[in-house]
Image 1 (tube, one colour):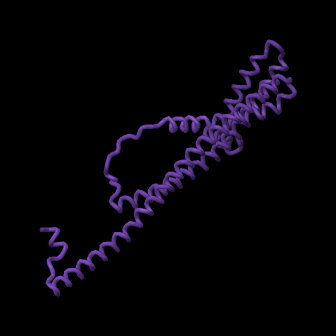
Image 2 (cartoon, rainbow, N blue to C red):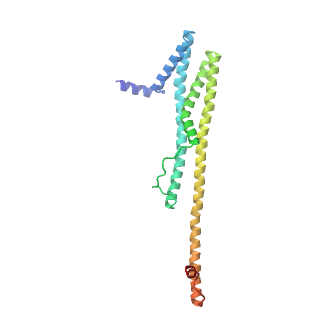
Image 3 (cartoon, one colour):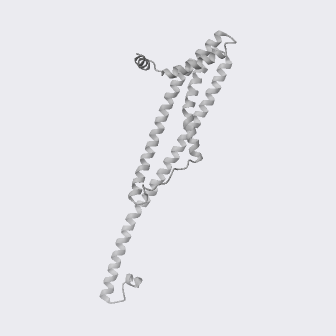
Amino acid sequence: MFVQLTSHCKRTLPVEIRLIAIAVAAGLAAGAFYLNESVDLATAVGIVVCFSAAVGGWLGLRLYLMTARFFISWIDAIGNRIASLESRLTQAGLLNRDEDYGKPRRSLAMHIVLISAYATPVCFVTVTTNAIATALSTQLGSHFAVASLAITLSGAGALVLAVAVQSLYLWRLQQQVASFKQLLKRIDSVSPVTLKVQVLNRNIDRTERLVRLLTGIGKPIAEQAAA
């Protein structure tokens, strides 16, 4: 019975139950903070915080999932290019897949990117929650609205920075893969040149031997070098 009720609530409510529970707890905590001033103020603050946390949290997480899906698609595209390059390098004998390179060390740039990736959902939720709270808290007093607006702007700045850091890092990786691809094309272009040199050398050597054989002038250059 409880499982069926939970499933029904999940299908009916657009916001997950756990998120609603967190929002209710946040609203009760915020309202309790203002009980000494006024019951009406405490009730209003609790409702604003609860509604903002529920709707803003739901919206922020949905926006984050869309952004994460975009980054994952970008990473998959880069990974496919790298796999193609590794396959060509392996076929050319320039890369040994069986070689163990050990665990790669994470650079400072990688740590910064990872921090920005972890901070992105927090920034999304902070922006959407406080944006809704700013709109709702105008009736509570200017200091509530100003505080919510300040947090919203700070979160928006942090969000832009986090997304920019990840985008810049992936763009640099994409450029590096593109440069490797161009280098591999240059390496591939050496093979026809090498073949032409070998063919030309073989024919000149054959002609030189034939001329010396017919004229009896000295030994072929290859035999002179060997001697």
